Image (cartoon, rainbow, N blue to C red; front, side, top):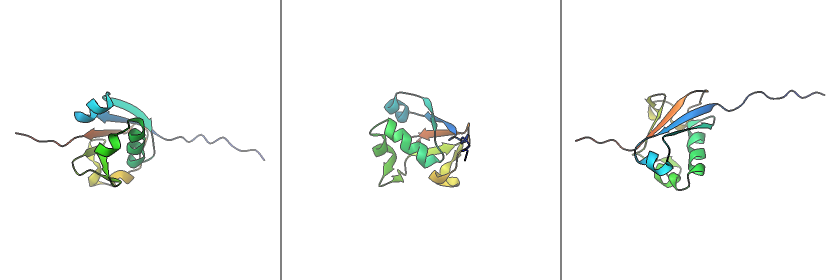
Length: 99
């Protein structure tokens, strides 16, 4: 029996950090592979220890954190369960206030 090599791989996603998230990670963006928004966020938290305490409480996204997938707030779609395609972009923003 000959096994075919599986050519499928996880999509590469660009993640952009803004304001205090950029300061915490010391980068403005990176590329990471993952299938869902939650998976990408968990991988980022593993890469940057302590970030999980800023993004999550008891496994839920902090209400003040804004996550956008291709310019749209993830809360307006499938949230962290959004399935990702190659080349998509996640942007992580802190709370926005004006004055």
